[in-house]
Image (spheres, rainbow, N blue to C red):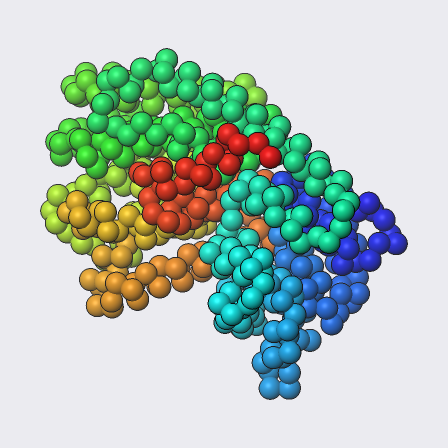
Length: 496
């Protein structure tokens, strides 16, 4: 159907959107790319239709096609403002709002589109008598589509789609999406069962009673970053779950349990990556390092077996950098020191573990491992740094109050407030602006892709940013998993 030359362009776009948002996109990737390639040559067919133009723009940019923001100039009046009459087109306004989040830095027209639609949609949410429209507007204002977690969006889209269609016929894609969602959920359950057995057999929980036992929460980071049911994503999810378990343990060692002299010695051992240097460590640190050492070697073996590349040096570097960043934060806290905001972020994007997650991800998802890409990884390319900054700022926005109550003074908010003298609320607004700025840079990387990285890896990097925004949207879901219990059940337990 996507190849039907007689189908109206807007119908093709809507079908592509339905397929992608319901979680079926990876099954029809070639057909979607071909249809959008044709659409790029026929954008004039969408003129004067705000919904069609906005939808086409968003879908094209999502897939990495170069399309100019100038397609929206036609909706402005003689004074350079968006025409007030557009506010009567609710579907078009929603589509324009979602499209505005695909902006690059410096694209002021899309910034104006975002402000224009946001102001109207806030009023619409409050004043509209149609409950269905009000609920949907509330949903998109909480988190735009660009930032949403793919699997949660798929479930929401499948469940709510019939409410918008005045038809007795269920479209074929919707039936297929339900089947695919349930089959993928079964794959998740199998993966989680295997991870539960791995964690039990590892035996660390019996010896590290101080550490948070957050297996399911670690697993959802894997789902968020690698959402599809493809076999290679199953391997990635399981490896990511193990990785996140070690990050959580290390975080608890550095933040809660370890003494300063122990932490300095442990960090030195990690830097040396020498199994013979663990004898002077306390038992809990010896066990932790040995388990981590084995995990890195196990991962390196799998990558070498599958792709013929020894990735262990790169993996070791990522873990070393993170532990050194952990120690810097411990020293700040120990000395009651609040660093500059710049110093905090330069350390914090590493300590939040995003670079560890994405370094592992590169080797797991990349078909062609190149010297150019390895050089970018070793030099902290923006594809590592930007999602990690989103991760760090989302974390700090959610955990500030709890950390302050515990006497922890080093946080993005506290550093920014001290440095600038602004109010806490203004600091929060600034953090959200920085998150949005990171996304604009990621948008440009995805579309122009002047990097040595594959589109799949770039998508994984953006999925990490999405997962962090979801996990910390209403608080610290990793520390207090009850905050997202319903959503976890919808992904892992409850079928459609």
